Length: 268
Image 1 (cartoon, rainbow, N blue to C red):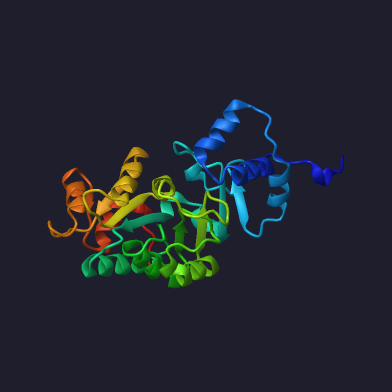
Image 2: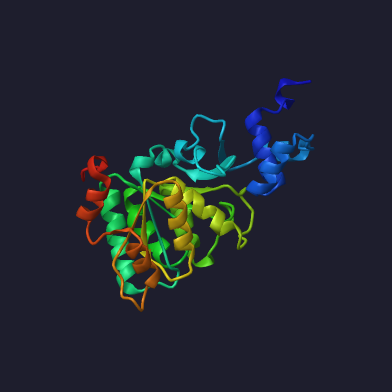
């Protein structure tokens, strides 16, 4: 057998990811079952991938994500993976899709200021708060978007240009192979990666039942800090409930500095 035809362990994981379309549960079941997997066609597809990937076996795999519950086996990405190399320099910023001007303004200004100080801003690519967080960080090369679909599938469609810009000047990353379409169950799974990659999660705006609260829950389960902007009770009650339950209240960058303590990077 030619050496080039031998599948490496990392290629086997990537092949499994293609076979099961990045579904963690299906991949975990296959790996634990120790059954013989027919991966020949997927192995050839891995060799032809135009998107880079890293596996939990690789040295460049984000260390913080290798330690969370249900750690992903494979991450497909476009851009600068080194943005996730230090969890203490990563701050998640997430919030409502149907956001209000105040939450959007606070999110954009905080993301921009933190990115200027050298922090990576981690978010989803949803409309609303996520978009403002990424737009604030992107001019400083510090925007990371975790997707609930493959990196070559543009969702939401309104953010296609932003997604392309992040691929060029930041980092697009997903446990789903490049052309996998979004599905509702992908997004709660994606949220565990946003929280797991970051030392602090800031909620820009949240309703009573939202994906933002799921992300906050993951952050707390990883013993990471959660913070919120103050909100009107009739605008974002989920944020205020988090604060009443013990989340930090942040009104300016100095509040973030207090939470992070000596880890705070000084503005260049």
